[in-house]
Length: 304
Ligand code: A3P
Image (cartoon, rainbow, N blue to C red):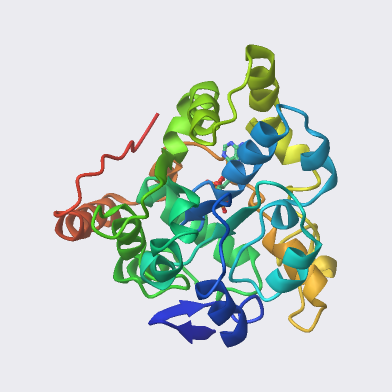
C-alpha cells in the first residue's frame, strides 16, 4: 500500500513517484479526464468516449486496451504510455480524490480540461468493489462482505472514502469549471441518451447511425467479449488456480490485471446490492449514508 495525501493506494500499481507525477500533471486545454471512484462504471465511460471520438467505429476499442486508450494518471506505467500516446484529444482516467488534483485543474490550461465524473449508487459500488478485492491481486481480500462493508463505510479502503470522493468532486466550491456528471444508472437505463449527452459535452455531435454503433459496441454483451476490456489472465480468480496472479510477475501483467472491469460473475446491473445486503446491513448503510450525505443534494437510483 502507498499512502499519499492522506489516502491509501494499492502498491504495485502506484508508487510515490507516480502519484506525485499525477498531481503535478501538465494538462493541455484539449484534454478529457474521466474521474470516478472505483467500480462506478469507469471502463464503460472509457469505452463510450473511445467510440464517440471514433464516430462509432470500434477499431480502436478492439485493438488497443482500455488502459492504453485512456490511461490512469496515477499508475506507475503512465509516463511510458503517455510518451507513446498521440491521440487527440488526449483522454485520461483517474481515481484520485479531488483535493489531490484540484491544483492542476484550477488554472489554465488545466481549468479548460473537460472533466467527466462518473458515479454509481454506493450500495452497488460496495458490492462490485468487494468482488473486485477477491479478483485483483493488488488489493487485500476480505473474508466476509460484512467486514468489507464496514471498511467501505468508514473509508478504510484503497482510494479512500466513497463519500469524500463524490462530495469532493461535486461540491460547487471545489469542482472543476468544466464538469459533466454522468451516473452508471443513466448509462444503464438510457445508453443512447447518455452517449448523446457526452458527445455534445465533448463537442463531437454524432448522427443517428453513429450513436447506434456506439450503443452496440458499448453494450454489456459487446464489452464482455471484447478482449481489450474483458477479464484477462493474471487475476486471482480467472480460469482456476494455474492462472493465479503472482505479485512478482511483470508490470505488463499488472496492467492487464487492472484492465479487468468485469468480475467473473457480476451482472453489471442496477440494484445488484439486493442480492448481497442483509436487512441489518441495509439499515446500517442507510443510517451512515444519511449522516454523511446530509450536506449533499445528489440523488441516487438504487434499483431498476
Ligand atoms: P459489476 O461489478 O456490478 O458487474 P469500473 O470500470 O469502474 O471498475 O466499474 C466496473 C463495473 O462496471 C462492473 O460492475 C462492470 O460489470 C460494470 N460495467 C462495465 N461495462 C459495463 C456495461 N457495458 N454495461 C453495464 N455494466 C458495465
